[in-house]
Structure formats: structure tokens, C-alpha cells
Length: 429
Image (tube, rainbow, N blue to C red; front, side, top):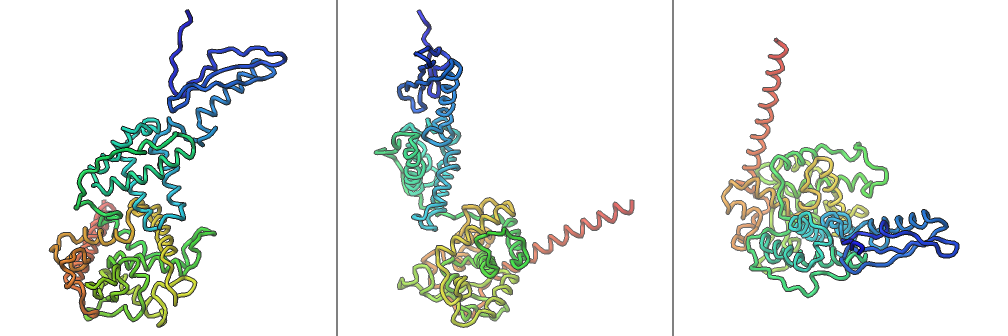
């Protein structure tokens, strides 16, 4: 009795069969076992010689194994995390139907999915029990809302893409009953990622040193305008040193940038320019720039911006608002560039407008909570304390920022002096 060969997904039977002569041609009949575990599929190839027929069969098997026949370079043997990086994330990046503000939320969901799934293959991830465990694991770690977001992203941008490419027949989450657990009220919101103090200072110093008029740039960069490039840099500096939201920063007019009585610079934001500004309990808010170098930069920008124009107006017409979507895209491209230049990975997807509030809150965590709450307005219970005279110097936050900068400069100077002494001693030897 012939020995039965046990086949697994991805196998073929070419080595087990011989081509046979049919008239003037040689023909080989063989079978392929798909990665989805379904029944084997018969194939037939012919050639003028036995070798040619077998070569055609082997070429077809290699094509199927690589997934090129219908699924592109992806098969059920591919890693789920690799598929997410190679297909899902680029699809979200290129989507014109998604709001730009939603994309970072989806990127975070993809990161959670990859972390929870680990090194499993697409074949393993297509099992309904496995898919449910991934989502429930995310919900347990990050909260119910993160779990629901992950389910939506996994269904549409991962499994949905696989179905379109015929890698799988349907989403394993279709009709799945998932236990999300309780909502974590302490879970961080999307983009609530902070830079380290060292990376924050490194980025701030780097931005202050960029001169768009002289820096080398790619010849066909989308941000070829020097003025636009400078606006992106200055806008980033302003957000980094105040925590002001991008929506408010886009609407700043020259008369709202005010020299305060302590020698610093305030940005006064009227109620209607704040997020949720139409709410009855909303009143104007004042931000003081926490870095003197940035304050000088913004002061110069104010002084050259004519009345009737915006500080960060449209690149085509400064008297008009910079389109929210276009502005956001320009900022995100710049952050990605800085992530590559400085090696600060958080800038690639995680840190956006809200991230600067989180970063500043982390750097000054040693200040009393009510001081930070007053500054950032994170609690409704301190709303009355947020809204102060536009010419007031906001202490002790401003004082703390100046003291921190002085300590850092002193430390850097001590390190430099120590290096000089060591060098002199070495030369003396």
C-alpha cells in the first residue's frame, strides 16, 4: 500500500507526481493546499518536454506560495504586524475620507493591535477566538473605548483589506460578542504622549536654529515656500511653549500678542477662538510663552504681520485662515521630518497638538496640581481661574520655566568647563 503523505497549508504535490505524455505534449497534474486550510486545489500544466511542464508547475507553486496570484506579497503565512505596517497604516495615511485629526487615533489603535497580537501570522489572526482575545486584551489594558476603537480599526483597516485582497474570506470579528469591561476613566486620551525633558529641550533648540532661507531642502518638497516653512516652525515653537491648541493658534491676530508687565509675551485668545468657545461657561484665555527665545521669535512675527492678517494665516493669503486640514498636514509632515532628523520616535505619530500640553505637564509635574490645572485648564472646576487679564504675567508657571532653563544652562556649562579642565590636564601630561 502506498504511503499517504500528510500535507499542510502551503504545500504542493509536484514532487510526488510525474508528467505524462498526451499526444505531442507533456502534462503534469498536481495539487495545492491553500493557506486558509481549505481543500486542496487541482492544477494542470503542459510543455513540449517533461522538464518544461514541471518547470511551469514549480513556477505556479512559487507564485501561489508568495501570494502573487491574488493577494499581492501577502499570504496567511505572513506576520500580522508586518501586514499592518505594510498595508493598513499606509492605507490610513493615504485616505482622503478620514479626518486628519482621526488618523493619529487609528495609528495608536494599530500600535495596540500589533503589541497585543505579538508575532502571530495572518492565519492565526483569522481565527475568531484569537481576534476576540486581541480586542479584549486591549480593552483590559487601555480601557473599553480603546477596545472599541481597536475593533473598528481591525475590522475595517486590517481584516477588511485582507478580504478585498482575497487573503481571507471574511472578518473573524463579524458578529463577534466582545467583553470590553468597564470604561477606564483614567485612561489617557489619544495623542496623550509626552516627550522626555531631554528630547523636548533638544527639539526646541533645534527648531530655533533652523533657517528656512539657507537650509538644504529636497527639490520637490511640498513645503517649498520659505514663508510656509517658517510658519510651521514658529507655530510648533508656540505650541511647545504654551500648550495652545492648533485650532486657536491658527486664528491668532497681531493685536492678541501682548507684551506683559514682567517683560514676557502673552497670547490672548478670545472665547470664540477656543475649543468649545460657544459654550456659556467659556471665557477668554491667556497663554504666556514659557521660553524667552521663542517669545522673541513670536514678537518679531507679530511686529511684521499687518493688521487684518493672521499671525499664521494661509500661505496663499495671510488675511485668510490657514485651512485646518492643510495646516494639520503640513505640521504632521514636519513632525515626521523631525522624528527622522532627531531620532525622536514619538513625533512620528503620537505627539500632536494635545501632546505639548502633556509634555509641559510632565516637565512641571513637581508644581502643585492646581497650578498646572490653572495653566492648562484640564478641569472644569478651575474654569474661573483660567481666564485672567490679558496683560498679566502668569506666575509661578513662568517663573518655574525660567528657573528650569537657568538650571539646565548651568548644568551644560559645568559639563563644558569640566571637559576643558580635563583636556588641559591631559595636555599638561
